[in-house]
Image (cartoon, rainbow, N blue to C red; front, side):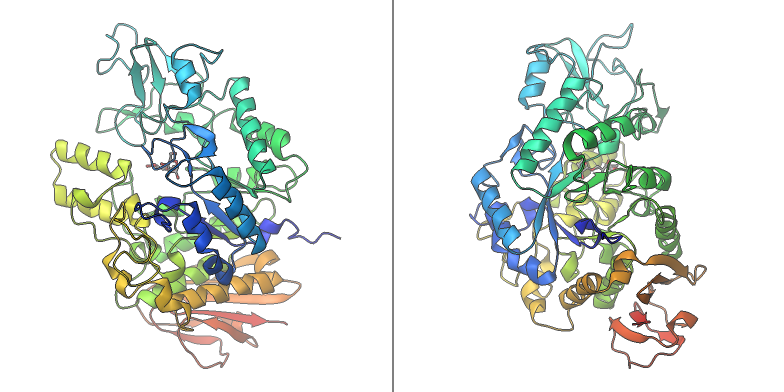
Length: 565
Ligand code: ISL
C-alpha cells in the first residue's frame, strides 16, 4: 500500500549549498566540491535528506555560474567530475541525495551551442532568439533593439552581434543568451543532458527560471518604465507553451519515476493556480515550484523600492498558497536562497531578539504543508551583511544597479541602503564555520568579505549548545521526520486576523499539531482553544509545560503543541 506521502521528497527537508561560499578546500578563496564533502557530517547531523547545489558547471562566472558554458563538466574552480562522483557517493552513505541546478532558459555566450549559433554553423542557427534591428534604425544604436524589453540585470535585453548582423535576446546578463525553446532540437538536447545526469546518480533538479522558457510569439513591446525600457516579463513568464514544454520534459526524462526524482521549478510570478496545476502528482510535470509571492512583498514597482512587510501579509500569502495546493499540488517552503537576503535581518530582529526571531521564522516555515528548504547558514541564524561601499559588492545585479542609479543622479547612500536590505550578496558571504579569521571558510583570501559577526555567530559555537539556533533546527527537522501529521496533515490558519501572531493547525488521522509564533517584538496574549488538552513539543523560549488555551507570548516566541497521540 502506498501512503499519501509516498514520494520521498514529501517528507524531506532540502538544504541548499551555494558552492562558491560554502567551504574552500584548496585555499583559493572560493568554495568547492571537496569543501562540501568535508562538511557532510554537519548536514547529516542536521537531518536533511537532499542537497541542492547551485551551479558548479564550467562557466565564465559572469553570474556566479548561472552562465554555463558546458553542462556536462565541473568548472576547475570547483573541482572535477571525479570530485562530484565522490560527493554523490559520500552523500549517499549519509542518506542524502544530490539535486542539481538546471539552468536552461539560457546558456553562457561562451557555450559551444551559442558559438555555433552566432556563426550559423552546425544547424544551430536558431538555437537562440535572434532578431533583426528595428525597422528604420541603425543596428547597434540605442532604440534599434528588436523590442523594448529590459534585462533583469538592467539595460536592454538585446545585444547586437556584429558578426551575425543580428541581435540576440538575453533576459539576464549579455553573457546569458536565452535559448530558443521553440526549436525541438534545443529541447531534445536539454532532455539528453538531463538524462545523462540522472544516470550519474543524482536525485533530481532545481530548474532555474523555468517559467521563462516560452515567450509570447512576436515578442511584443512591454509597458515603458522610468528608464525608458519596457517590461517584457508579462510576455516571458508563464508563456503560451510553458506547460507543453514542461510536460514534454517530464514525459521524456522522468515518466514513471515521479516518486524517484525531486523536481522543483523556480517560477517568479507564478500564481497559486499555476503552482497547483504544475505540481499535481497525478498529472503535473513537477514535484513542486518555488513561487515568489512572499519574497516580492517588500518591494513595490521594482526590487530596489523597499516597502515594509507586515507579519499579517506574510500570513496571508502563505495561507493562500497552503489553501490553493491543499488538494492538488505540493508546496515548497522557503525564506532564503542565494538570491534573497537573510530572513532574520529582513523580517526579524538581528539584534536583541536574534535567536528568538531566527527560530520563530524557522518554526512557522518548517511545519507548514510542503517541502522545507534550508539555505546554508540559515540553520545558524546568519544575518545580512553591513555592506559599507560599492567595493564590498560582488553581484552583477547589485553592481549594475548601483552604477545605473548613481549615473541617474540617485544618492549613492540611499542606493547602498536598498542593496543592504535586498541585495543578493547578503546570502553569498562565506558560511560561518568557526571564529577564526575567515570563519573556517578558507585558508586563503575569501572572494567576498566574511561577515564580522562570525566571531560569535558560527557553527562551532552552536554545535554542542542545546539552546542554539542550530539545535532548534535539528529538532524541527526531526519533528517532520517523526510525525506524519507534519507531512500529510491538512493546514488550517488560526487567528487569521491577528496582526503579528502566525498560528495554524495541522490535522490528520494521527491527531493535531498546533503551531503558534509571535513574529514581533511585542507581547501578546492570545486564546487558542485548539491547544486544550495537548502537550508542548517544541518551544524557542523556555516555558513551563502547562497547556492552557490562554497563551502569553513574549517577543518572537514560538511554540508547537501536539494533541491526539
Ligand atoms: O531577478 C529577478 C527580478 O529582479 C528575479 O525574479 C529573478 O528572475 C530570479 O531571481 C531568477 O533567479 C535565478 O536565475 C538567475 C540567477 O541570476 C539567479 O541566481 C537564479 O536563482 C539567472 O540565471
